[in-house]
Image (tube, rainbow, N blue to C red; front, top):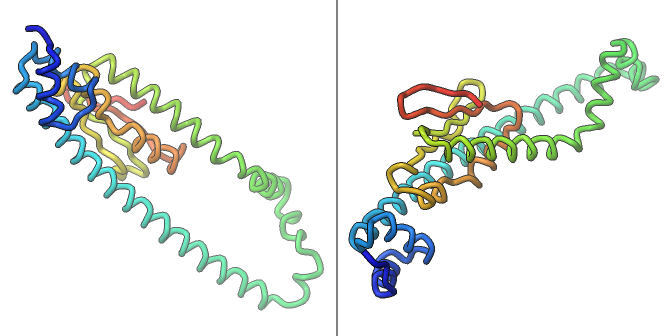
Amino acid sequence: MEITIELIEKVLDATDADYKVVKQALLDADGDADAAIAAIKEAQAAKEAEEAAAREAAEAAAKEAEEAAAREAEEAGQTEAAQEDVGPESEADPDAETRAAGPEAENQEEAKEGDWTTDWTTDKFADDMVEKLKKRVKEGNVDQIVVTKDDKTILSIPVNVGIVGGLIGFALIPWAVIFGALAAYGLNCKVKIVTSDGKDEEL
């Protein structure tokens, strides 16, 4: 069936979707405007549900990070108080403890000074992993993307490319949310895909 301007305008009015999305939906539906509208609305609903789940996961992760920061601050305060109780002897040489611990402790101090590279490293990890996921999804047979940390699920994104069809389904996957979670947790997280036959594949 021919894809006419009238058909495109009908689907645009009913869905408020992007022109390219509408045209692709009509092509996938062989020009059936009602079928294209139903497919786009289903995709939009799925995307809204995924984004809501991603927001909840991000809020939970932020809360966990805030609580961890509070615990670290409390522990730092306790350490500082303990050091003050030691007395003037500890003020004589603040590096004495590090030297006494040997080269390993000194290396750790040097590593701390290099923490400015952490953001770059995690961003590169996240970028590389998202590219691997995109490539794997395009290859097909992927039903779900799962990001975990310490065996706890951070994100669980269903992949509905096969349901929605072609470029529409691929574009609806919240890649920015996945990137953000990977960048936030860096090398401490694991990424796996669940295939349509129920198998787990870690990337």
